[in-house]
Amino acid sequence: RASSEPLNQEVALTALASCCSAIEAQAAEAKDAFRERVRNYPCGRVSEVTGQLRISRSPEEVDQVIEAFEERVDMETREALTQALEITVVPCAGALADVLGRRLAFWEAEIEESWSHWSAQASLFHDACRGAAEVWQKLRESTRALIDKLAEPTSVPSEETPPIVYLVPFLDYRAVQRHRRWDDAHDALAHAAASVALLGAWTEYHHLRGDGEVLKEARELLNTLLEALESRFDPSRYAGSEAATSALAMDETWCLVAPLAERSWQLRQVQDGGPLCPSEASVPSEGSHPWWSPKSWRRVGDDDTGTPTEMDSATAALDAASAALATASALGSDEDATGFGR
Figure 1 (cartoon, helix red, strand yellow):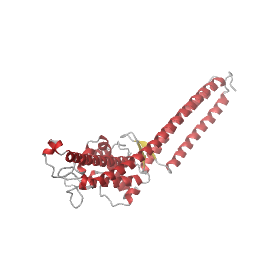
Figure 2 (tube, rainbow, N blue to C red; figure 1 turned 135 degrees about the vertical axis):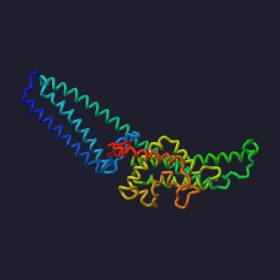
Figure 3 (cartoon, one colour; figure 1 turned 180 degrees about the vertical axis):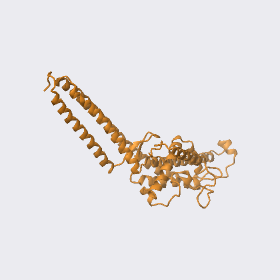
Figure 4 (cartoon, rainbow, N blue to C red; figure 1 turned 60 degrees about the vertical axis):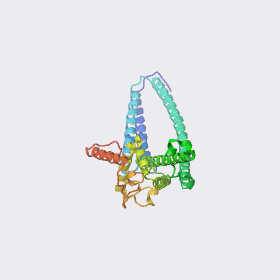
């Protein structure tokens, strides 16, 4: 009952002890509940490089997430204990009741707002997942349809078209149009291959695996695209898979993520002695590079070991970035930008 009478000091100290005990018990329960959760569900931290959630897979990375969570719980606990000290300094029970009432109303509103925000974001997330699945399926179907179309004799441009036709298109408009469509098809396949390679690097760095089915489809799609680029187009006139490699070299996201993703992949091979994903378990080993890396792509003119005779610009950039990361690690920083921790 709210009152203007001063609080009894002994009663105030007893209430303070009870309140502090309850706060500390809740903090301990929160830590135990989180440790139990990470044993059954993925957890992660926001990457300092991309600003996106990076799933923690190794025990060391999981320990870092747990440590960060417990540090936050400890900070919140200290703040709550500090606020609880007001029990011993308020002039009367009425003033304490007014303060607690205002704080209760404030935090109830905060919780309601957070719940509404979470619900809205969860709906957006599920909608985005459905949209991504639909786009992915359309990409696979469109790619297959385009490659099948390229195999038709009527789609292949004639090699006997006189050069004058390209200067004066109206002399043989159909031939010029066929050549332009062939060029567009090459560019489309190269762009698609670069996009799938970027997705592979992105999922590797952020440890996004799921059941492995999409990664398996992505790998098969990339192989199909690269094979079409190398076999369907005249290497004397078209760059083939080198066009995809050049597109990656000019992509800022690729240049940022690919070196870190390859390092993550290499560490995974060392720690686990082989691929972890179901998509990689049933296919031959790629050697020393992941499937999405241009270093693992076979090109026209490769030697018997599958090593390209000329290193492309994107691969050289990847090597340089990897070397820079290794040098930075050797300087002894406790935690580098890759998020791998100590």
